[in-house]
Length: 283
Image (cartoon, rainbow, N blue to C red; front, top):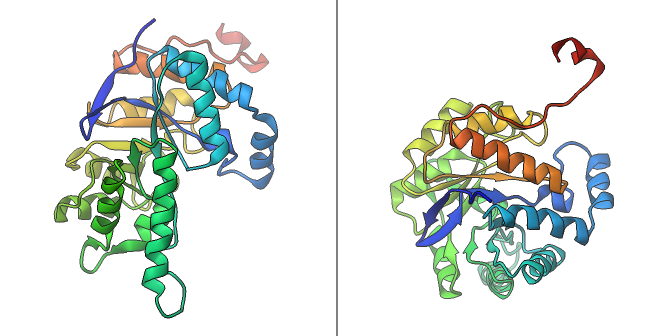
């Protein structure tokens, strides 16, 4: 079996393809009905089978929230395969503390509790979610306020800090201020879905980033075909950067892995095409 290419982030070897979790947990970015479909369809057994496919190709890096059911599924896959999954957890927490005296103390307590949970769940990397990071961005001063406070708290717990963002300014400001982070999560896809600037601007930010970038949503939550979405991202990021992909079934996992390997090897994709009556004349 081919082993998927790897990169190094913060001294840790990671597969360049990262297992996403939105299609495990029911975040479709499509509709409430689609969210309910995912949650109703998925079972722990199915998710374990998906993870086993990824691990069979050497894709051993997974990204998601500190969700107990999600972590239990990772634990089960590790037990069945004897392989370790490198966990990138993206906690959200209250950075405001409320409109009461001592609100900063409450905010610090919320962060501490969230980071303690990530540590107990075996996170190697801890990247505060976009809900935290982007709320801290000060465009006037071109800084991410308090980021180093959270990075220090993450390192104190033995995890590697990074940041998750929907705003490419976060990458630029972190680089410009020397923020203590080892990597960035950045939305990146060919149609600019959920991106705050055009794809070519985001491309430039990624190309210039001082740290490796973990790109997410390459299929724009199902709005792009896998061959199209993957062709764009793999051919416009750097060798140290990564692509995060969510899948619903083991077959989808196998398909995105093999597509990715074709593109990385500069081959035309060899996957089986869909067959419908309207394409009969092309066969």
